[in-house]
Length: 371
Image (cartoon, rainbow, N blue to C red; front, side, top):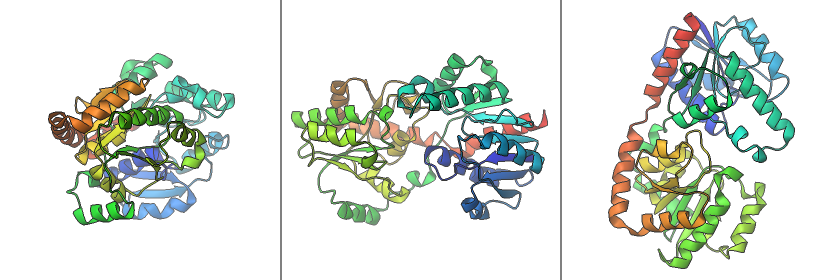
């Protein structure tokens, strides 16, 4: 049997994490099926860590392009695969083999104002509609996302399978105290800080977070408290810098950009509280990563976040800066609550496993390919 996996987004953040873990767990689980991995030419060497039944095939068509609508079907025909897995909602109509598609969320349909233009919205909606109708099975990452898919697309509920994401096992490893101290010194983390990790696109709600942080400081919940934001470069979103100026927080808010995983784990462990006030998430890994590192979590009471948190986080209304501020203050100062959130968070984070999730994905591959 020959199965293709579209891995052109292997190096991306969210989707890349999803693809990388599927490939790694499949390489441990399945040594007999032949896997054709469509990847960018500069990712060919990443297949060296996979089994001999994984073959990396270069594909130059960019994601979300017109050319992928034709080049991907041609590549699948050339490789004579029985099934393809498209891990991010685009399944070209000309694909003739059986197929599985992952629709992580419906954010482009829920918040079209965050797309670059009308054409991007039409492309996203058309691609998701086509993929949902054409695919033999749809995978998604939370019950909340499944509800959104059923709301926007006329598909049978049994066609949609919920398979949770999981965190990298390195977040569950015992803390490296020496490395943590090096990170503390390098980034001059001499004061208690609230941490946010993730990209800083508009739906992540960072402007309201900055507003809420100003309120927390005004209340004096923690002496000389800082806010550390790890994610995209701030130059992409000048409105956030303007928000910092507006609330006179220039000396108290730091934007640090992307950080490697080992450094990120140290930030999680050094933080007093982790806050994630997103307006919409298909799943939302950062709260679980923080929980795995033993940090109390404050997150939104909307979308998939209550489902993922599973009672192990302080939930707030992300549309209300006062609610966010109250949640942060309570997580900073209420010691019984902090201890409870830490204990529940560690237990919750350990309940998600890529090995378990990929076993279910593999079962679906076999069902679809052999049907």
